[in-house]
Length: 444
Image 1 (spheres, rainbow, N blue to C red):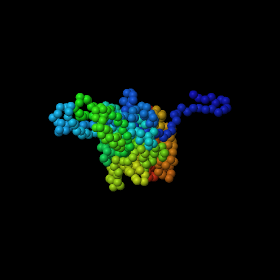
Image 2 (cartoon, rainbow, N blue to C red; image 1 turned 120 degrees about the vertical axis):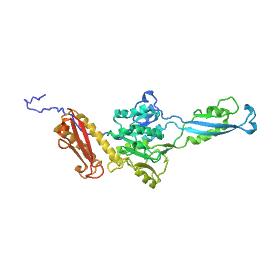
Image 3 (cartoon, rainbow, N blue to C red; image 1 turned 90 degrees about the vertical axis):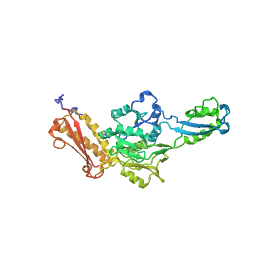
């Protein structure tokens, strides 16, 4: 609509062209896949967002009891072996098998203790559920906010199944970064040689007191010649208090045995804290860890030298500092993507720029649009450079943005509705660029 300017004055015309700016989004929002126990059945098959430990305890069970089985060998003494059952005398030997509940709650508590913020949970009771594993990548894509992936389960077979389900999503430029765990100093085969994966070793030892009532202790094989059925330690306490007390004493020692947990959940907290305090371009390493008492293996310098060759990041114990993350490598052994902060910086830039380009769909694929896109991305990269994310004494040494006919696009590509933008960033050294190419489908 034209403006009538017959009368002197100041007139305003609104420009209907969409504004474009590139904003920095969240960089460390993890999804944890583990044996979480939802309090409501409707949470079993969905990805759930929580903002705090209080949210978690409201929606999920955080204090499941342990269980134990005592297998008793009841042997009649030789002197009474031929007596009837009621007059026999027995000697007893026993073995105790302690079964811990799912440890996902403990891992999540470590995440929050080490700087974790809002995150997502996907409860997966068993890794044999092929249908739910197959559905997982699609569910992750629907959320849109997730950037980190982790499976903090001690069961190596469980983790292997989850890594296999996630592997294809890591190489499709979706910006997901997997924090994987190594059971024995080896790289999980399904995610080896990927720039979108960081592997951590060894396990962390956690102080842990198990909740274990007498009714949670099953007893099998006990007999004393009576008709009384002994199925639990509570039953045995009534029938043979001395023997039950001996078992309970052994159980007391096992109740406080430290728990061995993979470090990926804790590391997700470190990523979030480091990103918030310094930026995604800062390595999540040389950080002192909280909540864990020790590591399952104290790695030496010589051992770490070998693990570095595999791209495995080690958690070290130092006498003057405690537990420290002492590595920041991806699984990609090349100069471009060897280091975690470089890969994650580019992941963040790709996400932010793609999101900013969405309003440009159906805009004219012409010079004015290209200039607006170039200016918006240039401003975004300039801010990164000023914050110290990019190398270079001058802006032109730190980054470039290119878009235009004969520069990044041919006339055929323009006719096909493609707007191609090239972005270069000096992630490590001035004047050395890793090239990203963005293609935005425009209206035909």
